[in-house]
Amino acid sequence: MAESHRVHAPGRVNLIGDHTDYTGGLVFPMAIDRGTTIDYVRGGTRVVLRSDAEPGTVTIELPVRDDPSVVEPAWGRYVAAMAREFAAARGLSGTVTSDIPAGAGLSSSAALECAVGLALGFEGSPTELALAAQRAEHAATGVPTGIMDQLCIAAATAGNATLIDCHRLAVTNVPIPDDVDVTVVFVAHRTLVGSAYADRVAECDRAESVLGPLRLIEPADLEAARPELDELAFRRARHVVTENQRVRDFATALATDDHAHAGALMTDSHRSLRTDFDTSTREMDTAVERLTTTPGVFGARMTGGGFGGCVVAISEPGAVDVGWRVRPSPGARHL
Ligand code: GLA
Image 1 (cartoon, rainbow, N blue to C red):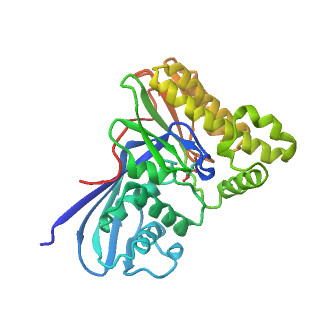
Image 2: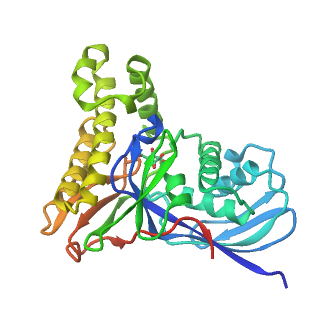
């Protein structure tokens, strides 16, 4: 009988730094102890996968030359796109199990991409895996997403969040203190396909065509830029510039055990995403409000692309009795 193999890739929750990655800014995601596992045997010239959470059987003939974005069932698009990335010729057959709900903003698609990459025999660096998975995401969905999800999922280490400079693709491991709980609360299913995500990328491009790279602008220099931009582009730019600074400050606050300040920065980040970036929803605002008024909670915010998905809170141990407590976990790996 063929030898059986297992790969696992975690989901991620972003603690702070949203809608900054595609302008080369700073992000602070954490790989979580929920993820996607593939059990498989190697062989043949096709990839054949079933999923415990998604419908149908994915059957991909190798090598993949066709457009992955038309594969059915739809979750097979990520599989086909990864197989095409690696010009995979050797097939496999197996099952996908996942405890990250799809469409919750916890990067189930990036986890699937990274897990498929490893199962197909990828042996390069975490950054190479992440870049291939990002290209695959674009090919599968057509949404111009940044590198945050894939790089966090490929590069994370146990016990740490990942502070990522998305311009240099530099990852710094930052320990999450033992006396801080991270809790994720699911609000609503969403998809970035057909959402205003691509509009936000275009609006930031518009601001950058006038101001140059947003990652190089200091919050103190923002007002001077105001007359140069239309009101919408200015608000988008203000979110990105202030969010990059909040990520820096958040890393310092965690390192100096100033949990209250770290939490306040998360709550500020939510406000900025709501008012300047227009990526929150009323349900997400209500969930954040509930969390921030819970005793022992340091701060809360929407997490990920927005327009639905999840909110995240940091708190004293045991302070939050809703949602999932998640722990900082290692990245994609063979088990
Ligand atoms: C999604 C994208 C990421 C990032 C976030 C917002 O998760 O996949 O690249 O842009 O939204 O921070």
